[in-house]
Length: 74
Image (cartoon, rainbow, N blue to C red):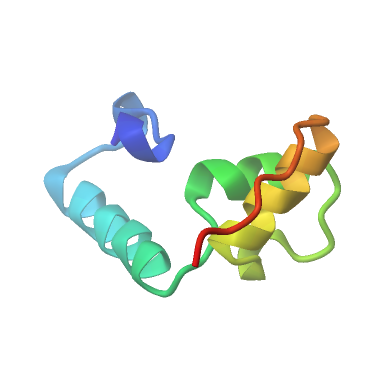
């Protein structure tokens, strides 16, 4: 869970953990921003953090943190 930016201590049972993992894997499979990215997108004022793709979130966060953009590899 820590890999996804979730504190395992906040989960109360295996069922809750399984449901959360299902949602996290679904977001990854759909190409959406990770939970940790969504957290930072919210903090930094992204207009629609839950709908951002992984790459959009990466570009937005890199721009906010002044990292030079790396061209995408074909």
